[in-house]
Amino acid sequence: MIFNDVQGGIDDNEDPKVAALRELKEETGVSSAEILAEVPYWLTYDFPPEVREKLKHQWGSDWKGQAQKWFLLKFTGKEEEINLLGDGSEKPEFGEWSWMTPEQIVEHAVDFKKPVYNKVLEVFTPYLH
Image 1 (cartoon, helix red, strand yellow):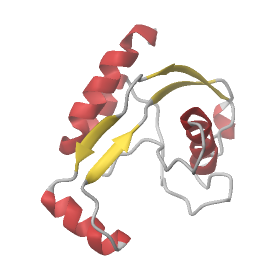
Image 2: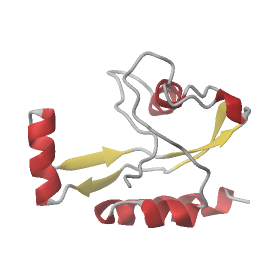
Image 3: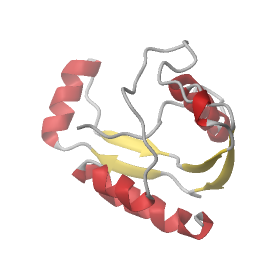
């Protein structure tokens, strides 16, 4: 099983908050969401050598890792809005979805991303009820 959160690139001169909401819409069809919190700094991780090698072949270039900006969003719509075909602007990226506790999200993350997920959870915990 492969687990992932919605993520994507930020276009030139695009505000990261705008990018987060755009990516959410593109990947899940969801536009009914509001930003509750933001990790106030960029979080980074390096790809392990075997992942880096795989990505080199898949993406055609050598990537050391990623820098990410994280936002906590509140879904304000109905579940019927969630559409894993996205908004039709991109190739679908997800095959299924489920609600999870923050702890389950960390548990399902690949090992090399867990420190980032733990840091995100540390920052967002005061906003979770």
